Amino acid sequence: MAGYEGDVLFEDYEYEEMKTDTDDKQELEQRDEIYPSFDIKTEKGFYTVFELKRRFDANPKRIKLDSEFQRESVWKPIQKAELIESLLMGLPLPIFYFNQDRYGNLIVVDGRQRLTALFDFIDGKFCLNHLKILDQFNEKSFGDLAPVYQTRIEDFQIQAHVIMPPTPDRIKFDIFDRVNRGGTILNKQEIRNALYQGNSTLFLKKVVNSEAFKLATGNAFLNEKRMKDKYLITRFVAFYLYNCDCFKEDDGKPYVYKNDLDELLGKGMDCLNSMPVASIKKLEEMIERALSKSAILLGPDAFRLVNDGRRGPINMNVFESIMFIMVELDAANENHISCDKARNSVQAWVNSDEFRENIGNRRDSAIKLRWRIIESINLGKEIARND
Image (cartoon, rainbow, N blue to C red):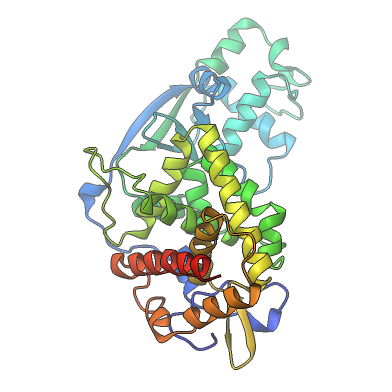
């Protein structure tokens, strides 16, 4: 709805003239400028290259390098060779930055290119070339080096600053931003995708690449490069799991949402990472059925607000609300619902003053979020009953 203060709009790549710089950008990129120092927990870590390689080779991996998080170009062969030369000379490397999750896994915040080069060299994936100082090692792979030099590389000590749990996500976002400020500024979903690598990131990738998602969103995200499509699904899944009481506080008590959206979305991805594969598959199938049902009943513009006849970009609050409705219709196993009745009921609700009020200011407060979830579920049940 153009000009509406509460709209959270996503850019529509089919309608360039309707691009709007509104709250979706703030929500993805906004950083908290002030936070209490006692919330920050970092430690200095010292790791040998051999230890990090062993973690990387473990199944499942215990150190994670995420190419979707850091988008800088891959190092050239000369850069890789000079890095190995530095280790052979005993020169110190710049400090690495890792994030440690609650399972003890290390996620690389800064240093992915260096670690990739080290691991690839040890695995025999390239030879040294164009070295100017230690030119006697040119044309040699790791396996060609004398044992003393192999040991020198494997025993090399890497120093890292490690962000430890339970540092809140909002602080991790700021740390990631500062460390990576030399390149493209990352938005929250891109950082979240790095923090919670595992089942959750694989799940998100599968859903947004599904035909059901493309059909339901009218192919609006075919050219998406900044994970706005994954942000849509992350929000819905986190809200769905929260409503199912899947989250716990650190003391084991039921999780209480305290208006910290980053924390809630992090809880959602963490929950996905700890889910059995069979449960994740069921969740994926449920979401794809809901998306397909939305496309059938409401068409490709289901998640858009319309104002004065103008077709707006996808609205994330409309998306998650309609997804709750479709999940209810799917649960009711209603296969003969009238498209006209469903469309009229949904549009009347989405256009109501009460709905607009609950996607306006502080739309993700505990009260407004709970209202949208409950009312969406109730509407889904009502449509199923009245058909």
